[in-house]
Length: 79
Image 1 (cartoon, rainbow, N blue to C red):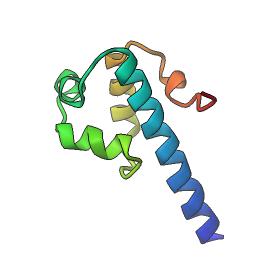
Image 2 (cartoon, one colour; image 1 turned 180 degrees about the vertical axis):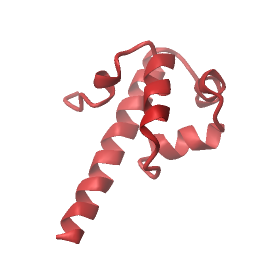
Image 3 (cartoon, rainbow, N blue to C red; image 1 turned 60 degrees about the horizontal axis):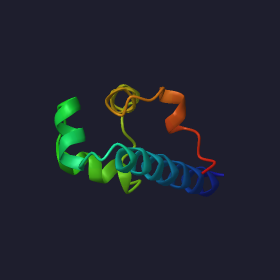
Image 4 (spheres, rainbow, N blue to C red; image 1 turned 45 degrees about the vertical axis):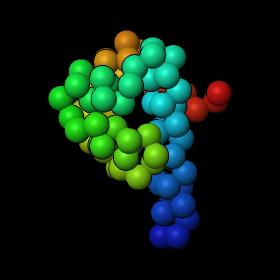
């Protein structure tokens, strides 16, 4: 069961990161500009977008706010 959980987690984080990247690109924001808006390191934005970071929910909320979308939009993976 833990292998299934790990696979689901990896897939979820990749989808979340991909969605953030799409929305960031739509807003013509660089990773650096997004990072500045929410006072985190640019590298962390890259890590999130690559699905490598299991980031805090408050950081996800800050990203949504900076992208001017409702937080639920970040979890709408049907693209």
